[in-house]
Length: 594
Image (tube, rainbow, N blue to C red; front, side, top):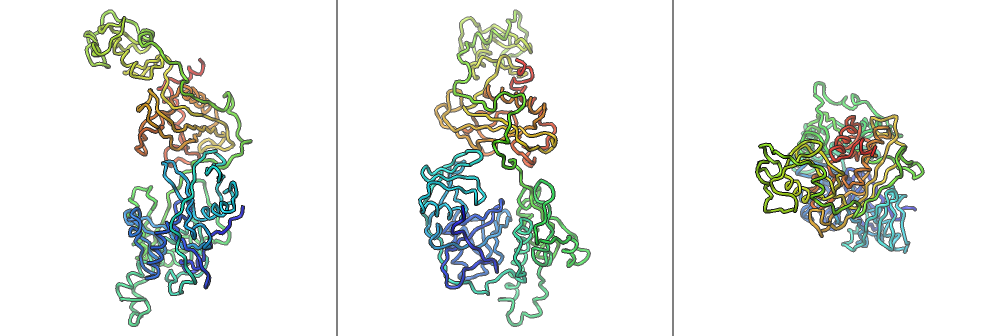
């Protein structure tokens, strides 16, 4: 589907402008870490335009119009947004749309994110959606815009064509974006001494130009403060030459060497984008000046991002060479895969498992369970019961609190496999406080008696082989596991019965190498899933959210092509570690034989 009414950006001087005597709606946008231009709100754009009319080289304080944007300012001369508390800089630009388009009418299209709040679409997508909506199309395919989503206007649902994940969307009315007429005077051109050539839009050049932009902005500010006006004012000639422009990145973006960005080897040189050696670029630097690297401006390095960002700005302003690097992004998913390329896992029956609310047998008599796995001790040793902390030669601490026919408070039992001893009444109390699934777990050594089960909510587990290899396993294909658990209501086995629980980040994709050991891990994970041991309901250690589905002490690899988060490959010890974790839950090779 063609892109109707897409914005047109004319980048002659950093500030785009519409043709002469032609009305256009202006939308200010900032570049996020994924290379997408995200629009500011209409109210923010009106504020920026008002400041622009008064001083085209001024600074816009975004907190004056939106309290959530208090840390941010925009330098109109460098066309960059600067976050004052972290030092993060992001390019901004000025885009134009038809007055009859969505921003001109104040129409905003939004999708519901995992936290239940609403996120606006990119403006070009919003314009496309509104055009299809006005033409009364029943649905819209966003594939032509680079997104594998299908929008159904009847149900107001967005569907991911790969994962089939559905999200709600909505259309709401807001303030219309500012309408302007004519062109902007050339006196507002920027940057100082910039080439008129078309700049490269690759991520490395964007980052380098960000620092160069900040450097020139600082220099221009110095000129205004030192000489009280424009650089061409009388009396300033000759003296201004003492304040030199940074030559760290002299020339256009086409003279910048492209470093490898992200994981995955060398990045091919774009056509028409010749590379120069860094020695050539640094040829204008006086000899003896050290090259001081400022790394990971996105905050993943050991240096605080605000310190790294300001160091880069000051070094560049002083004419020192700055080596900039960007933290690589994790590769979470493999390339797109056709369903015909997904194959069953060799040696594993089926491709899907489901759990239901009453998946396991219940109603085991506590006394019967305790007696099944213990034997009575005639003469109790003079040591503590680690459940009630009373001496074994004394009565159980649960005497008077818990009463069961046939189990006296002074009776002591020894667990069959590990030999640890406890009051039988204490073991009954421990069982009643657990999942009541017919199993016991020694509180001292964690040995499991019977079949341990968990409190995992109902859901679905799928698994198949995909034709891609994991880092560290070049000879093997990949087993992909997809877990999907919907939100629901907690039951009596959960922390807050009757209360809703959330399920963030589902479906969750996990990866194993398709070799003998990887298939063994998968088989044991299937058993753990059937026993409801993979997930539980609790408090998220990453977000702090309570009453949500969380992992249950069996680690999974959710990062496909890298290991930047610690949840990916290569990790030579992972398969052994996860087998140990499964064994701690009572799942092992002997379970497979059974």
